Length: 472
Image (cartoon, rainbow, N blue to C red):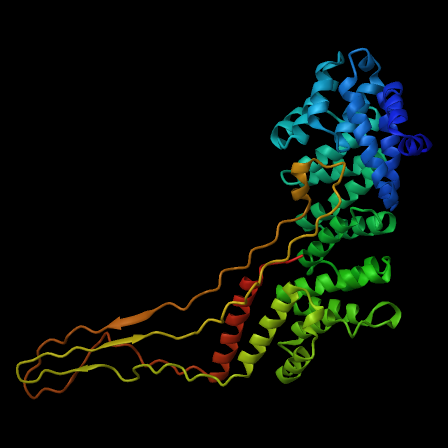
C-alpha cells in the first residue's frame, strides 16, 4: 500500500522509472491492495487504482520472455487481466511467454472472457480446478468461472463463488462473489441462500463503490422471492444498513411491488419507508405518499386516496414518478366515474315469417365498447444507474449481473361477437310463426358493479404496460 501511494504521489518520471524497475508481480500486488481498500469503502483509492492499471499495462506490454520465466510474473499477468486489464495486452504478453500448457490455456480463456466470447472462455477454463492452482490465481479463476456459468449452471456457479470467497476472504474478490451470489440465488428461487448472501454483503461491503449493483440485485430478489422470504427477514437485513440507505431500499421495493400488484409487500415497504429508523419519519417525502397510496388503492376509500394523491408535491418527484402519479390519478378518476350501462343485446329470439311473395332476415351482433385509457406522456421504464466499473468483471458481462426486467403479460382484449341468422324456409299460409333453432339465447344482464371492477382491472393492466415492468 505504501508503495502504491508513493508511486501515485511521485512525478511522471519517478513513476516511469518505478514501473520499469519493479517486477510485474509487485505492481499487481499493489493493485490488489488498492482494490481491497476500495471494496471496504475507501473511495479515495479509486484514482490510485486507475493510475496503477495504467502503469501495469505499460509494464506488461514491455515485458519479455525473460520476465515471464518467473512464474509469479505470469500469474500476475493473468490476475491483471481478471482485475480489469486490457485483453490486447494480456494476449500479446502471453504470446511471448514460455510457460506450461495449463497457464497458457488460462491465458486464452481470460482473453476470451475479456473480449466478450463467453462460450469459448468456458470451454478453455472448464477443465481447470481453481482449488488446484496457487490461491492468488485460483480466487480470480473461481470468480470468473462462476460468473460465466451463472446462467447455464447456477448451482455450479454458486459453488465456484464460494471457492472464490474461501481463497480470498476480505478482498474485492469476495465482494464481487457475494454480489453475484445474491442475484443467482434469487434467480434459482433459493430464498435461504439469497438472505444469507445479502446479510454477509451488507455486513462487510455496504460502502463498496459497487454496492449500487448489490442494491439492484437485492430489490429484484425481494420482488422475485416475495412469497418465500418473510418480511421479518427483509427487516433484519435492512436494519444493518444506515438509515438513509434503508429508506431508499424500502422506497424502491415499495415502487416495484406497487407496479407489480403486490399490495401487501408494497404496503409493508411503504410503511417502513414512511416510519423511518427509530420513528424518525419520512411522512413528508412525496415518494412514500405516492407508493403508500398505490398500495391502498384497492382497499381504502377511493375518495381518501384521491385526496392524498392530490396533495403530493409533483415538483419533488422524478419524471417517472410523476408519470406514475398521473396513472394513479387516472385510475382513481375512472373508479369514481359513473358506470356506463352495458350495450343492449337482442333479448328475444329472432322470428322469421313469410309474407306474400317475400323472405326477411335479421343479423344480431354485439360489439363491447371498452374505451382504452389515453397514453401517459413520457411514461418510460427507469434506466439503471451508471455504476463504477467493476474491475473484476469483463465489460461484456456487466449487463449479466443485473437480472433482466420481466415483461408484463399482454392485456386480454374482448373478442368481436357476431351471429348471423339465415333466412327461414317458406311456411304454409296461416301457419304459426317459426322460431329459428339457431337463434341466440337470451343474454344474462351484467351486474354494473362487476362491470366497474372488470373495467378498473383492465385499466390497471394497461397502466402496467405504459409504465414498463420492474423499473429500477
